[in-house]
Length: 591
Image (cartoon, rainbow, N blue to C red; front, side, top):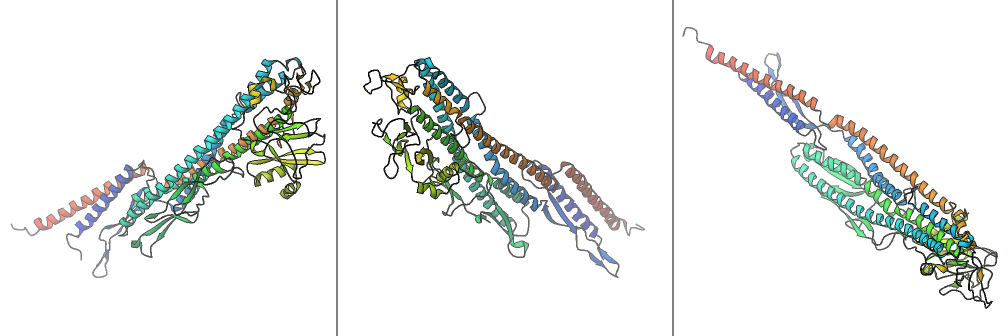
């Protein structure tokens, strides 16, 4: 049978339970705005009852507090981290595509197409008969040519700087990953110590979960918490893996290391871009997250996820083909004051057609006749010969049919693509030979290096506006181009409408297609980022509905536990009055 003071003990357990519940409620309210905080709840259970003699039942003994539980859904954590990883991968890609769009700046009044409009307008004016020998018109052509070259330089250099900046962002992201790994390992150690007695270090776990959430935005991770044995008192071993390699294992962690590359992944790369490896030199494999997005943006020259090198490569190929064709046409014309053929307008991609002549004709300094592998001078179907320079100086080189056939392409565009895949930094150019087509290879001209040639920059007479020259004394030495002959300037102007210049059509079509592809990629990136934001918000709302602190609910709990505490206190008062009656009020009859 319970004693007289037993009621006090029951009320005492209620007081303590209510008091602790109020403290937890206060902790929840205090952290309502703390990032990553999960609300906590006091778990209570009835104390062990005692039996009443005579089979009258069991007497309750009050309440016990068993644990402070963190309210959290591990499955939602898993889901949202997967979405964080996808979002983290697309955000830098979107940012990069928006920057590239700004660099190309099309359509606008200052983009490359506007500059080309002005360049071809100047050539059109030069081709108008009497203006062909007008030095003012020629100066305008030169200045428009300089503007075109500077625009190409500017776009290339901006893309190049963007690659450097992305490389710095890669290094920063690697540092962040290493920092998070270190902090998580440190928290793992603290959690292990606090949970040795079977407790739950809820607040430390919140801090760890918040760091894991942030880490999942940077790189794809696999998180596992494995119990140490069958007893809760043995704690857990928490592991974070990246691509099958351990980043964090309980209180230990590995780090990533960014070291400069010895070589180049492609001909457009800046020297010594950073290569990511594990600290012990093991190859690092990244399949998602911000780091993968940055690496794709920095490195990809092809594939679905096009990076900065892809657009640099496209810009270079435009520059190479356009300059080559322009120089060929320009070099076949004549300037003023005895300026003969073979003068390039731009400073690279040298291939000059020599019409109506023979290989015995002297060639300009630095040039040589183009020959095949058997030493035969190459000429086209019209009997024209070609002069070029050494391939290291913007010239071209014959490619044998055996090498072309080995590529296995079904079309010219296919052959060029296959050749470029195997010979980075080089491209092919096709010349229709007398006995069939001839393929020539040349180094791709970087848009950042293009300029007008010194011959044009230093002497306006060298602009070859005419197709025919004038030899006044018939000594075989040209005096000047025919006055008013702007026929070659007209041919140069017509290059703008040459639909066979690129696989994508005319020069205008090339940029339209490039900008169109860029726009499609940008729209996809915007869609992915927006969709991920909606998905993450939806999952986070569900997570907050479980783990988040509701001030209304906590205020209700506060009143509930306060009243419970007051009731227990009242119970003690009642028992006290009962004891007072027994002790001081009983047995006083007759006093």
